[in-house]
Length: 451
Image (cartoon, rainbow, N blue to C red):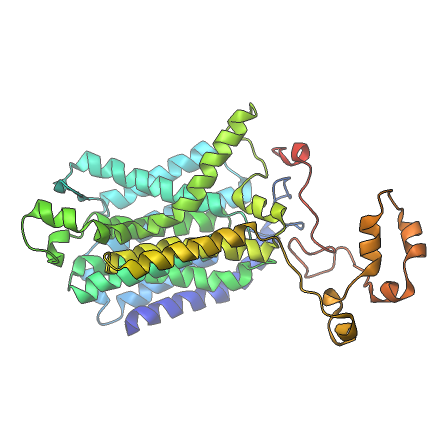
């Protein structure tokens, strides 16, 4: 565990320290695309954050190769080299896309080639545990198709959820934390060496996300771009492939009897094997809703709009940070709920806790943004954001539109003193709160533009 934690910390440190210089490089290189109608941020923000994350991945693998216990992962398996080869290819395609915005079909072809590179080097699915049937060995072509499909789905799911500051990196980190606990339990608790590569990949991926998050939290100073989202999606898929398709469940020896009865009784134990894919639950639901919504309006399923789940949360009234935290909550609930169910599937308390937390999550989804207000006698002791603004309340009750000059004349002197001027284009300010208070979403007809 100490070597895994050391690898995680070094990966996070390298990613964190390199993100600042990468941001300056992205600004100089012009990797700052124009703001689109569906974007949430208001100022051009540099991309190419995946460069720092890729070098963090390389640093983590290099350190693990020189540690006493983790060195066996490199000597006994070719999976780390396969991961590095596929990651380098997908990272290069992402960098080109962040700078030049290459065609979607070219990116899809690059993702398939990266998955094929990993398959050629041995990182592939060898068998599938099917409940009620047993351990089913699959052919080489079947394993290749399943591996490529899993890589494509995971990469595009992570890329799809990357819509708010810190959302994709945080959700991947949460899913990997739960997956790391389960993979480490298989490797250390049951002595199965085949689970060691997946455990190492999960630790490195957590370090990549933790090192990048301080720069990417709202208001973000840099975006990971496709070079980062496709990279962490590939590492996530590699972890799932390594432990799902190459760890023999019979070696767990949890039950006695035939192989078929063993697999049938171990259905809860297979749930965490797909823990990296739990992150797909939220973006997959968002994807289905988007296709239905656009098709119902007579639009193309690929038309851009502002109807995604995170846009809906902002429209309800949640702030940018609160919307991200709500998505974190659901990701943690799905990942750690599956982990708890696998550890003790017969415990009723785990089901009750998951149900209670799900109810809390539904309440948080519908709860609009709430800013506490202090009593009038204590207003002078608190910052202006918690003071009551009588002028704003009077303007809200007024039906007729009031011009800026009329509002200034009718505004009480006390409220006018508390109102702080907002400077547009302040250096160093970024994100949705850069200019004044958060504006509501744009008109639907304007927001659905594919600019």
